[in-house]
Image 1 (cartoon, helix red, strand yellow):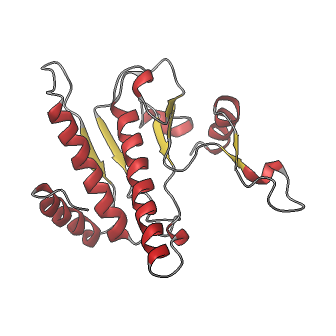
Image 2 (tube, rainbow, N blue to C red):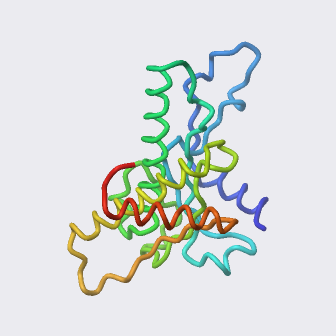
Length: 196
């Protein structure tokens, strides 16, 4: 839809970091370890190519952790699981904040690259991050998605929305009815509690 145009934009506008393990293996080049966005962070880019007609306000990109990094036995596995949950929640929090923030300076660990777009979004439409190529079971990622959305909603209520604030919604895109039912049930369950 916008492949080469997006790649060119990212190379020109997104800062490059090098992975901390860049010197760890012999024969590797710095190019092998280039990262554009750290795990848990979010960046905003304008929608390009055919996507610009659909996503007028741009696209927020987030990086969830790989689920396969949960390894070890007992205590180590528990630590890895907690870290995975924390990083996935951080990715959602930063993505939601960046999408709905109209103040560049308030975005923690996020980056709005299109300085011409200062208005916050009215709606955020996102997949269940981490459950695709990152390998997490849908139920685990879905639970974190709903929990993060509810946490954002509670924070907005605590800030006592101004009368002129636009209605902001979060919608999750799923491919089948079973996943939609699971998210609906999880929303009902978590709406009455604060557990993950």
